[in-house]
Image 1 (cartoon, rainbow, N blue to C red):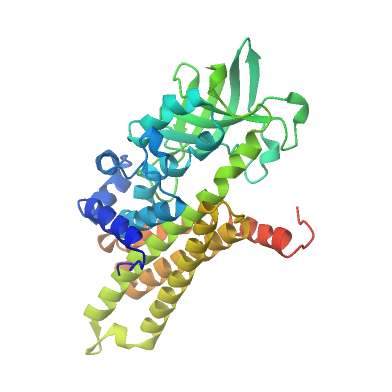
Image 2 (cartoon, one colour):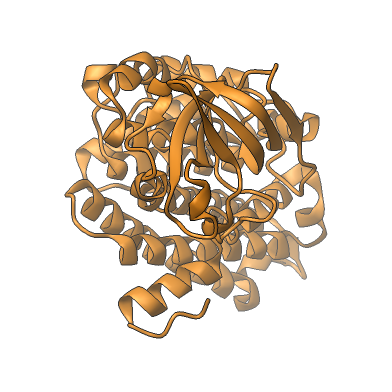
Length: 387
């Protein structure tokens, strides 16, 4: 079921993205997933249409649009059947460079943003570590001075697109005395130089067209001008990109729910058992109707958070709420799609099992559902900190 946007600009974006996505059917995405093959053809077509740079400043070749417009982009990619494999091929470029846009030097922005907006630069995101997942204060990857430059040593995991990427937005500790705190960390836009970097894909449940990797850095040289913003303020700079990330991943979750629900409704209409379509049974129809209602409500929350962010207003509560709602709604829709198709829902032929695998990820990443609720409990309700 195609989303209907009341805003003409958003509707035009949706139709433009659908036109590109229509060239890449479920069979394409299933093959990319099963072959663990990056969807380069899709990425290049999105770049050619100017969609990858939608939220980057116009002065660097971007579209100059906001997170609201980018949310429509990500929803429509997911809803085409591309799900997370399609979204992850482009979304780190769409929003991952936000700290560079906001805090980067002119030299850094001029060197990388035009290439990123044109789709010529793949970007990875290096924050999570084996012993520092949700607790970023435990990061041990260190950046040490080397004259005017730096050397970075450490290990990151769940670095998406590391195999394809030329550069990584990398968080490292620059003040050794700040261990165990959120202070003293800095953000770098570093080259993934194979002479100093070892990349190993992590075998995983789904979204296999876009690898998630463990990356080891062995005294990686980084030029001084590659520092993003101020030394020691890396975590604060990183926070500026977290709300847009939550909003756009939420939009992707809704998109997966959209396509799963479309498949389920079509099957429930065409599949006859006991001489009537199974969709006439309320045990089938009511959960699908519930999925639609939940997806619609989640989208309203996403738009609220996105519009607040674009207006420069605080949106931590709204972004975390939207992410929680969308992840639950998207997974519920995908799960009910599998249940509606029964045995065929478990078969690869109908693709809903792929949607289900990718929708499950949204309840973990980029922040777990539990951590989103922790934010609401502590920052909104004023409850005592639980960790």
